[in-house]
Amino acid sequence: MHRRKFLITGVAVLCAAPGLLSARIDTSPRHLSLRHSHTGEELDVVYRRDDRLDGKALGRLNRFLRDFRTEETTPIDPALFDLLYDLKARAGNPDGVIEIVSAYRSPKTNEMLRKQSSGVAKRSFHTQGRALDVRLRGTATSDLRRLAVAMKRGGVGYYRRSDFLHLDTGPARTW
Image (cartoon, rainbow, N blue to C red; front, side, top):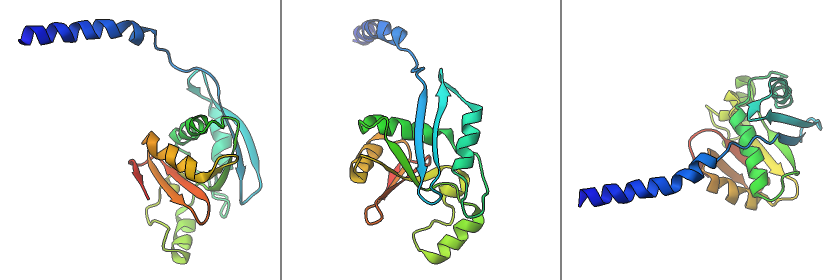
């Protein structure tokens, strides 16, 4: 019986092998269009080419996503950019402009916001460059939430009354 199971498994692997060997990495340029709701700044950037991150583009993104209150910057997790890119594609809105509601927060800014609202986490992923609060022009935020949750690539918080989505690169969870 074990021999038969072994042979069936072997045949299944061999049948799947051509598909595995022909699979290729997506090397198309990855582009994001962003608008910051607090500063009014806009940024159009290709951050990945040939499956390689573009260092200059990452620097521009880090500056754009700075703590606008203190002007402090931090390296933003590139996985967030891939998440945004893939989310736009799943939403059928690959050329949509992402509106940034909140990005990096310095510890000082985060503490100030915590004193003003109970909804700000003490150890927020925003202070680590691992979270963004966003909207996608042309896509309902509720639809964006559903798609982000299905992707299971980090935390997804839906703020219906304020109409924005929190995305982070922490463990998959929702609220």
